[in-house]
Length: 424
Image 1 (cartoon, one colour):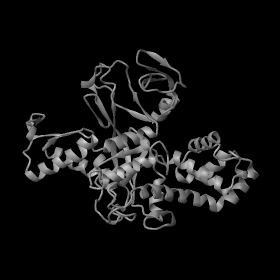
Image 2 (image 1 turned 60 degrees about the vertical axis):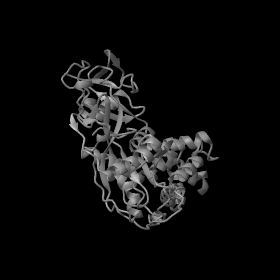
Image 3 (image 1 turned 90 degrees about the vertical axis):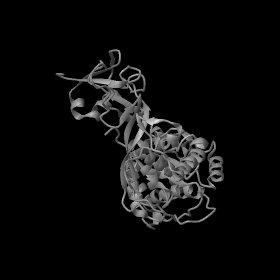
Image 4 (image 1 turned 180 degrees about the horizontal axis):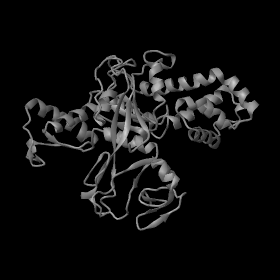
């Protein structure tokens, strides 16, 4: 697999999260406009687009990815995705499928919160009019906060007593309590560093002096690091979506609130993307996810030499609406932009392990692995396979440049790597 992280699609019932997952993967989630459409988590593979080095090195025709694909130098790298069960207010207290939803979150590294921008579904996913989508953004974060803080708050006096008795580092004490949320010590450390650097808590990292308010401040910072969230404002082609989008952008402009910042809000139409994909499969149009338009038989264009089917009036009208209300107005359906933002917010970078730096071989750049920013060459070898770590003898990049074990991998500098092992 090209990535070791999980992107989770979350949101209230009927916000369009199952349709979104279908739009970005080959999974087929059960779709319907009623609560708890998705009973079991639906897993699928999404694709993160990036510029492949095959263009720079003149081997586009020889680029044969083992996973995903590469088209004219545009590479699509597989990423794991999960659509979890519907969330409703009160989930942290076990309402609806709340306990299951929150348990599923432990497996996620980043959240895509699919929000119904049209305001036509209430907080329980039932049809309505005039609902404010900002409520959904706020209560998702509120439910996760109540889940984590509630568990800590009930046990806080005992946690502090043990911490004082053992004289353990504060980060170790907190990690022991937060490990059940799928977190690493590094994430807890980064959260603590943020608290100390910004002086959000007067007593900084002295847990014995923390009040419950201080604990709550830390939990909020921790959630920013543990569950970074991208908001996919869905159904952007619906009548009332425009005014709701403007209101949401205004609220989060230059201000991070509810665990959300403006750059992590993406406008989407999952159903439009699903329909366009279906039209491609049926040979009615030429279109690639992320494009700002499509072409049809009306444009006199063939599909790789095969003549596109003629559109009937109903299909032509629907495609025209998608073109006018989505593609021309917003530049794309937005679904690919959500994946891009989700990967980027995690700080992952692409690395290409190669057997030879002579790219004249029959197949080039077979693998692309996404690793966290700051990963060193030796850590990358260890990630690829234990044998490469145990037998590690050295590494080099393009131009025969030798790489040190502790060299940090950077895009465009040393992210094409040949690893040499003892005896090879």
